[in-house]
Length: 157
Length: 81
Image (cartoon, rainbow over all chains, first blue to last red; front, side):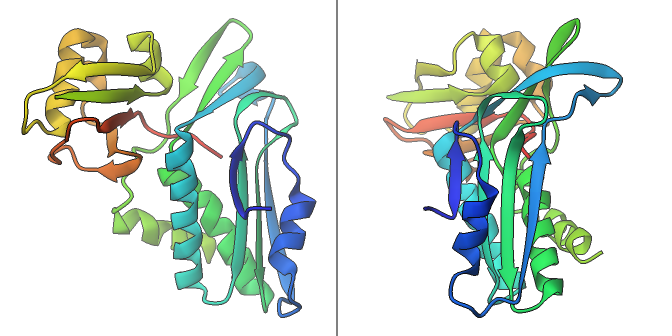
């Protein structure tokens, strides 16, 4: 299994955990699951559709994992993002980060999700009772060092 | 020369297509491709300050030159996760 994926298949966190924790040198694995919520800004959400610029999304996720490895040397991170139609309660993203000790595992895991929200070319199309809307978050600026530092700050908060 | 233009999310909805082919002059930049799109689809103008761009699936600046056959992508603000 690849540590990085953008896929229309149901996500499997357990396989990511196995992937990052093989080898025996890791004493901690931190994980994150992003889940489709049934409400947003007082709207009753019925489902989401995720769209990706797939080859670029994969490359950007690889870049984020390299960044995490530079920030917390020795960690091992894996991230899979789902695309297509997702029902309420389904996982849209799963992340696993392994490290010798817990602090770096938590930090690397948080860093990956913060950076995903900043620079990965994936979009959320929200369908709610009475309409639909494309969610627009951050303007993607991969070279914006201030944004990257902010992700590190949140990861270590 | 010709470039492929890839559009996503709301930009794709505005153009009613995520995959266009457009003729651009030699020496054209990503910005030139964008200006052509805005002329064609005026609704895209409101993305002027928030759009990001990529050439052949790598982030690129608006000032980057494009070459024949390049895939030029315009990305509205992202919302993954």
